[in-house]
Length: 122
Image (cartoon, rainbow, N blue to C red; front, side):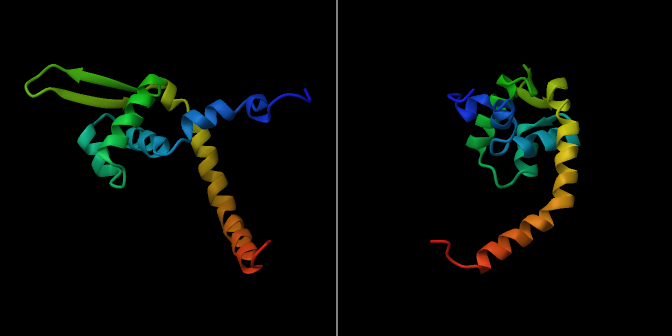
């Protein structure tokens, strides 16, 4: 196993790439927390995301099977997004991460402050 690329050897690397890319967690959280939503509602719930990026992330999440997109051929047409069963299955992972954050982010902040106050590490 000495010649193995650590990135390829790490079994969770693909999961991190899928789930923790920028904007994925806020989108999944909004859909989990508030249920099925139209694009404009997601925009309102995540105001710092641009429409272009939201569109890209929604397409990627649909491709990955973490959300479903339902098109209603009405006048005007309506599209709704919903977290899928596969996306919902991430709930325990997010709950564990939330607990870890509550328990450990103060220590991370303290470590950062100590590092920063030590000055340059040239």
